[in-house]
Length: 291
Image (cartoon, rainbow, N blue to C red; front, side, top):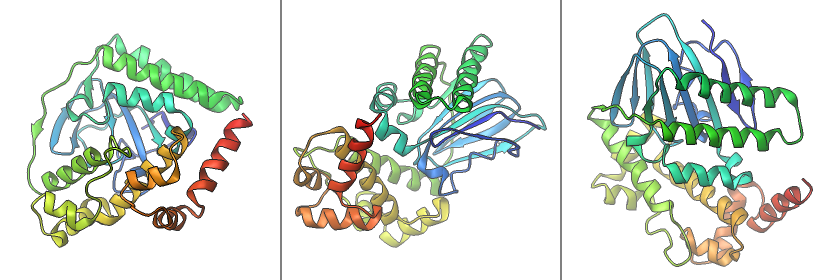
């Protein structure tokens, strides 16, 4: 069984992946990625958060890093493409992030699963092939070309979108799903006029009407990480985006993500990245200036 796959760090090509289970949200490195999975052959049951989908026809899936996913294969045949878009890629390509935000294919769960017509398969397959060719070319502008193809992929998918009705599932996934929905809602539109309201495990648990220990246990079981780790990683991601895509002062950025004192923000950032916020911003802009 052979799948053509793309793993974007910038881009890597993966081979000999056993079925479609290569997209495994329990693996820490995979949870740092946005995922686009196009199934062209095979039958299976795909679970995305609270919803399950019976996949028996060509389908493209857009999966957010925080999504809880699983795939159960129901046939011996599998085919298609998938790409993993590592979060730092969005720091270097704000236009790609803008397209992701505009169409909501990753963030709005009702848009994340799209049934494809036969005419859509060659169009989308060609975009994956072009991305693979760019990776192999080694050209200095290959990353720019790849992110442009990714934008075209999202535009075409949104244009032909046919959204299937899911079968809802219940249980522990509902609490995990609600946590990630709340985390995303709290951090999606951070700025210094409306800073993040809650940022501790206890505050998130209270907002979800759960005991902190219970929420921690659920997150650890289903994602391998506790509540505080997920909050920390999301705030760190938001910090990097603000440092690179705005001219806000460090004090304004610190306040936006819940630090009343800039020195505390500096300590938080350096502890988790190895550099201060100012140094991170300077290094990235120096690299950008040399391109």
